[in-house]
Image 1 (cartoon, protein in one colour):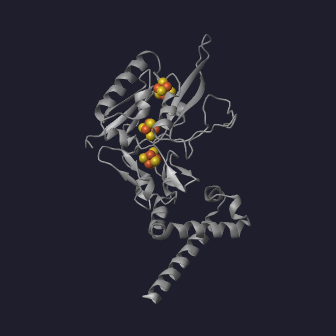
Image 2: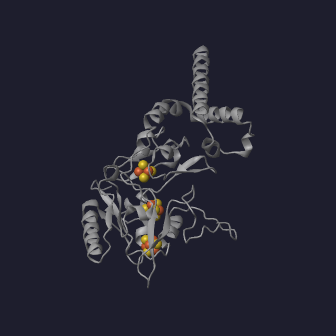
Image 3: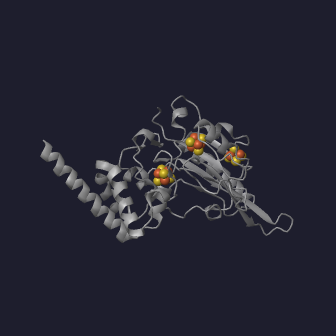
Length: 301
Ligand code: SF4
Ligand code: SF4
Ligand code: SF4
């Protein structure tokens, strides 16, 4: 694998919203789609599915903005939502199993086999990217098609994009290309046009030329990792020692507190309802379980 930093460049001003990239991502990574009639609920926009999920690493986002031009009253801000492969990757920092790793070329790689489903990465990511796959109890996210990069290919989504709204190459080249395009767009009257990702999170490896400015695409200004990272990191040794226990402990705690039956809620669903007190209680229970386990192990030695 080349050590040179690489990046993808998404140019919203060239994107036609065809979603070929979404399909290519599913095909290459063999990820299932909802196939039932009307299984994906209509959200009032062309965006489908409405958000990323455990089987969907990439979605194109569609946002309508008034243009101020009576002949063409709406501007369509078409964005791209997937992992940005941050230099300061918060997900890697908190991963309890070493499943998420940062490569020298900038890719934030993901080893499914190592993932223990602790979901700390999901909590830490400022872009809310990693998603839980309930069917196998693991996280999934874009890998920048690292398997293709290793064979000298470009990512599947880039390969399929007909209007060349997606490009891939050395990061410096992509930044230069992006800046040129922003300059062009500004001259054309798109005064908010910008290149997103040159410095955000220490530098992203998926850069975006955003014709209407990042707010129009729902991207955060100066994204920062979740402030709970120190607390999450403190949990790492516990999760690494026995995530099964963590999940069981959290579930037990939650179920005890809420009176739900386990089969009716996933851990992910349950976590949304937890209070800090419930989490603290779960952590105490896990620590106690681990202490007992260690004591039992010592006795049998
Ligand atoms: S394939 Fe290219 S043009 Fe089509 S939605 Fe994706 S980025 Fe846009
Ligand atoms: S976007 Fe989120 S999941 Fe992707 S590298 Fe950055 S922190 Fe990690
Ligand atoms: S780089 Fe690969 S995994 Fe990432 S969105 Fe594109 S096709 Fe999907």
